[in-house]
Length: 461
Image (cartoon, rainbow, N blue to C red; front, side):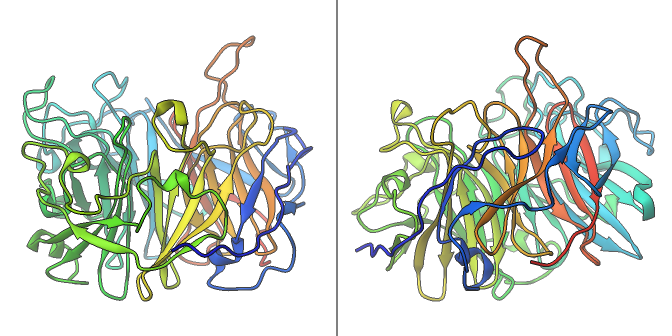
């Protein structure tokens, strides 16, 4: 049975410099920092100061911070393989001889303006336009190389890095061969070597399941891979774990197979029903998936036996920190089939004690058009705290949350893809930090596809 603990009150962040944003966070934020004690309630944080309007109209940042545009969709890739693809999404950074490799997803559907070029040796299905590109970035934000890392995959949303320095890219699509121009089944995870194009094998890791994948996180201790499913219609997605036959086996080891299981929370059919931040649920169960390849029936529809299985709307970001895995549910809406409404949750699961905790609840208290709802990609920041990519209505931000539970804006997207009378801004995605020194934050804007490198007076909190 769940046990609730006391949490601080909800507060609204307002007057954050350039944007006048409204946001509320509540919950046990100290869970995000490996048990470090919080010294203050959730509240308004100065962070790095107010956002300064960018005269170039691209990205507002606090004073003292600077950005470099590394890549924009439609521009020619330095490899000569074609135009930079559209729809920038999940991303990770890897070290290489004083430089950084960025591997970036492209969530391309059949109508994408710029598909991922079908480079022969790394293309899975020529009828699909998604995939990944890789950028080698040197000092000062100079891009030395930009090339296709994998092609012929579909709707590559997020994914995650492995302890052996590869990228697992996830297809948020479960269409079969014969759908549209597809010549092969989709809905898989693929492993990408960020360093060498020819080493990537464009074959799916089928044992990890065929479903609408969102993101993954790997437990570096035993190689367990946690996976989120972003299903758009009820029954909503599941939270999975994959137990590999060759744990921590290095590049290609996941092709050896393993067992796919889905999380069952006792007496909880829908995670949105848990509403009190700080709620702890013990005795989490894992149930073997009957048919991981979903040959006849999508996994979330399959029969998991007595007790059923636990679903959640908009399961998105997923990452490993300390001794636990964190995952995000971006929102839940009763009128779309969820048990309760919310504007976003962060959960943590501790494998060692089979304990699930609702860490944070996001969302504006008054106006859903204000920023602050729908967290998506999340990462732990090297200077202390959490970085959150926003994917909601209205203005779009990267927010920070400090160890003291203070919320502050770090960046605002200023690229208007709407009209002057009805402005619209693309979401942020793929936030990550440089692997050495942790002095640069890399982040994508989904539309128009733009990759930024952000430097400034990062400081420990």
